[in-house]
Length: 118
Image (cartoon, rainbow, N blue to C red; front, top):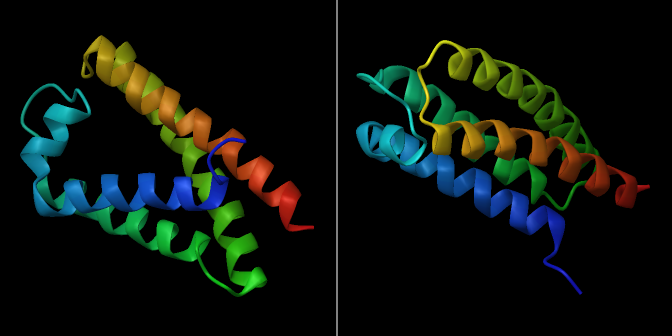
């Protein structure tokens, strides 16, 4: 028996979001971003991921489903953005694996979680 998908997704999102909001320079290091990070953009990412994490935990099935769908859409664009940043040399190899792999994983996890909602 593996970890429950929705709580695991929520913890990952809330943790990454909280780090990005509270300490943008540290989050940039953790995520392998090269150069000087924008604290403003890091905080935008942070609050977005915190909100998605909270929505995934909602007791309301309509909110959960909508949040999972929105998360999959966002993660699709995050995956593409990570590929573009990596191509331009703005991510470390570890950062590329973490950001691109993480976003792609969340697409798959979102699809699995949605299939279990029906």
